[in-house]
Length: 378
Image (cartoon, rainbow, N blue to C red; front, side, top):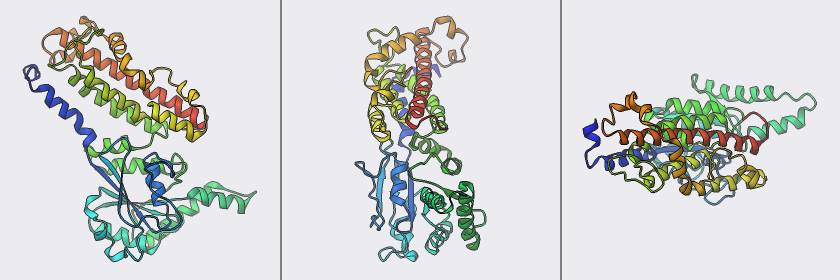
């Protein structure tokens, strides 16, 4: 392995490997009947408000008249496809899959804002016949709850209302012989409630292993659960980043006590801010969304420098993380970086810095999230 690392082409090879996970394509189709809330769900999954630049158009009428791809704002290899409503004049149920080019999608989410109807069932049967995965999502649950709250006060029972909504959907599925299929209750305006995490876990489990990473990183950072999953993925990624940055072509940078190519290091570190939603742009956007002073959210970043300050602080972070020779003398990485000792010190110091950096960012992101949504469970 040491001889392989000394090959002059190693840095180029590792750079390609480093980029590969973020280039894994994932195509998600959102379909259903007109007015079910497809476009709103597309926006929510992309972390966008309905009126932000680049958001899918929403409305009570059919606003999606053709298949429209929406790239994830931070992961261009992830595309969420807003499909026209099934059963319209332009998209008849019997030809729908051919018209929307069925084969391009990894899975379908069938959206309904009421009891699953005939067109929903027809679409599900057609997808099943083609061997693709699909998931039923019952949207606008918040509107049903608010209506029940007004009608049933003072005897309002939220759990009872949710149970009735679910039972009605499950009855439709049983009648259509989908006995093993579940339904997920969602509110576009509060994804963290109801069944979103159950849906997230189901989709993650059903995806091929190589696509699970792209799916998790594409999720909006709306809960500590998602933040911690992202941290787990990104910490695995730090090994690759450290290997590339301290490869055979790395040269000393002024102010850093070992050879490390910060031009390869910085893009990944800046990307980590975006993955956790704590880069400067995301914090400003969040402040507007929750109507809190931006400075109050930034004040929750207690362990990490602002993303705009990172280029001038990376040398300091690396210097503080430097490990000594005796720390690595008995490390298993001795087998990887057999010679010289300086290479081992550079790699382990960079890896240590990156792992701590990801830990600190995730902790800061949890504090920002808690401040943004209040002290309720996130």
